[in-house]
Length: 339
Image: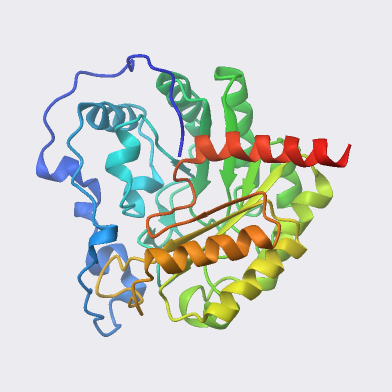
């Protein structure tokens, strides 16, 4: 996700967490958190195999990172999406900021982020995000968001303002954005690209055949065109996309997604195991084995991606700091080979 300079955090005193503080999402669960899913039949949650079980977070730096997020009144996708890597990442002061609130206007069947009518944009949020990045001493930060279909520009200007605020507060920090698809938001993508993030990430999430059930509010080929357009606007920006497996996709479909992404000149591909957030979410079709993930990784490297991360616990912003360094090195090697 992100890499921090080894320095103490400037935050409020650390207190032992209460049960509610450990998971602040506990106040918004079930029908209240996902009202559009309340009528759906339950999908029993399968027991996870040993290779994707993680320990509960207990490291003191985890508590420091959490305290800073609360102090700055910031939302993180680490918590909202119930990321299994939160213990590891926050213990290294790595947090992926989620801007524009904690309520999404979409209703994807895989996602744990709350859905409904969002609050108005907080115009002070970019400043607080930038202050948190500076306090954490991050070398690389990932900024993502909920979908904001209610906004005329889908939140593009808010993304751009957040990028500019981070540049001012932490000029040495490289910035990765993980954006919505800006569907039917003409000119929105151009606003974000003009702010010049170092990495532009937009996830395809799954194969085209599963979009109607898994990502019904999105359009596969629109997302592909979005990534392709970034490269047309600014070829220097790294592009990145990711998918989940274990939803019922076929191997040949995953390989076709790889080809589609390479046609859009996407540099970096992530592939991770889908984990079912609740009984009302899409069911896990199967747990893909580590050997199968390695097979996908080898196939993707053979198709020309500069970088590939394919493991059961891979997530879009997992180890993003190391990945950015690897991306830069791979591009430099590629340019040197052409010289």
